[in-house]
Image 1: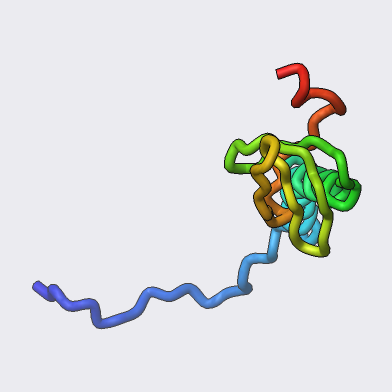
Image 2: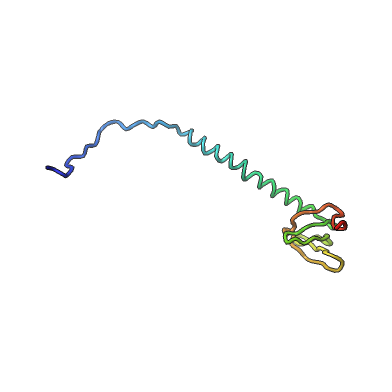
Length: 111
């Protein structure tokens, strides 16, 4: 009995033809990227642009809320910082990026 393979049973013949196309995977990946762009990237860019517009439009007298939860009225606007009046006699210097939202005029007086 011979337990060793003495011959390689390789088949010599033409290689099989490629059945797929180059365009099918490219179309699939392009579609996935387009869906990802529309659902993830584009809304984030729109929110970012809106936030930059909001930060550029703050002016003296606006009432804002910071990320830390401080409510105040803007006394002075600098390049990167705002001077907030939290209540009479209490002023705080805050970075512009810390502004969470701008409140409608008169909101602070109603509270």
